[in-house]
Image 1 (cartoon, rainbow, N blue to C red):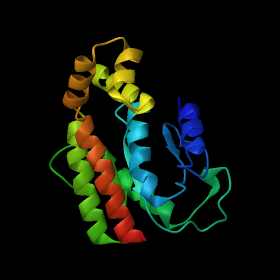
Image 2: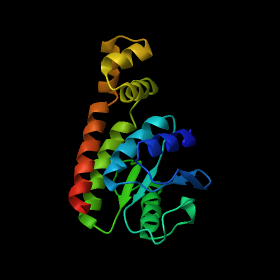
Image 3: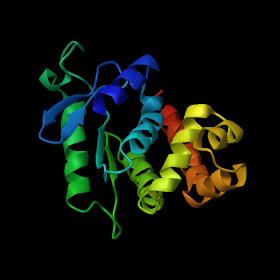
Image 4: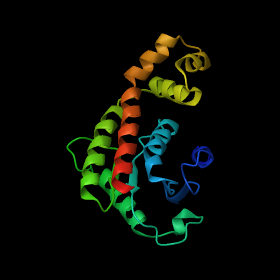
Length: 186
């Protein structure tokens, strides 16, 4: 599954290096562009929906020339990512469960993006397998009609599953997060 995610994200120019398992059940990569991070996160959530995937994102400098394997690279991006993942594992900064955390050198950005994803994660935690299936089919096909045909369901059923699976809120989270990243780091 991780190999397929790597192939897809490399083909779409979202990541520079394939996902590499670094320790036990952890994996990492480097994005091709910061603003692609929200699309990457949604793609990983869809691909690994049966798992409660915890994601730590570090935004910072990479000390080495970028080349595989990613687990041999160092720099503040990796230190920030470790800090972000530790924050998710420890229960996060909020009184509600989160699955995603960002750490960068910009405190205002961190506060905003972590609140945005904390609220998004609340929705993600409630998505059922059938709803994830509808989201995956919709993202793959690009239209409600084709997704319904591929799933052999009525259009209204797929539409309802997208709505109940908070897909439209997740899509807006991607747009808002991309915009925030672009405004902050470009």
